[in-house]
Length: 228
Image 1 (cartoon, rainbow, N blue to C red):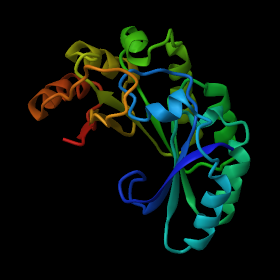
Image 2 (image 1 turned 135 degrees about the vertical axis):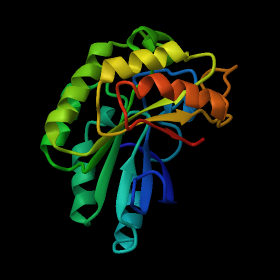
Image 3 (image 1 turned 180 degrees about the vertical axis):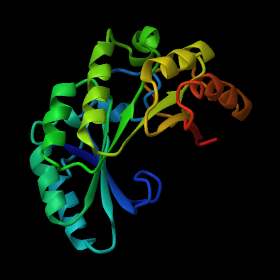
Image 4 (image 1 turned 45 degrees about the vertical axis):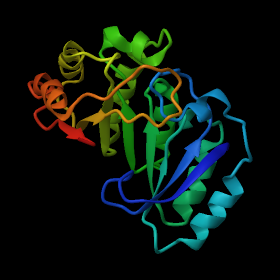
C-alpha cells in the first residue's frame, strides 16, 4: 500500500464524521485541473507513510470516527483491501474516493464490505471526458461503476468539479441526463491549489454555479452546490 500523505483531522471529507484523510499515490487519469498533481506526477516520491498512518489511527481510536481514502486513484493500489481491513478492525468507518475508471476492482472491493461510503467523480459529460481527464478515458467504465454502486446498497455520492475552460452549461445538462436520479450529486467549485497539472483555469462565480446547477436539477432534483 503506497500512502503518500496524511491529513490528521478533517470535518468535511467524510459527511457527518470526524476523519483522517489518507492520500494514495498514482492515478490513471491526467485531469489538467487536478489539485493533487504531485501524487499523479511522482507517486513514489517521498517516504511511504503506511506504517506511520496505521500507528496514528491506532492511537486515535475512539476520537476519530472514520478514514477517507482518496488519491490519486486508490483502486490502483494492489493491497488496498489489506490496508482497509486493518482500518476496519480498529473500528473506523471507511470512505473511498474513486474516479470510476476501474469498475471490476470497485465491485470486488465493495463485495468485501470494507467500505462504508463511496464518493465517485464524474469528470464531465460523456463528450467532455477527454478534455476533462487528459486521456481517451472509456466513459462506459464510469457507467459500469455507477451500476455497481446502485446495486451495492452502500451509500454513495457523485460529484463534478466545475472548471472554467473545461466545462460548459451544456456539459452539466448532459451530466444530469446521463446519471439520472441518484442519492446525492454535487457540483463543486474549483479551487486552484497552486499545484495543478495544467494552467489557465478559473472558478465559476457563485451566480454561474447556480446556472450550472439548474439543468442538472431537471434530472437530479436533490443536486446541490458545494464550496460556493
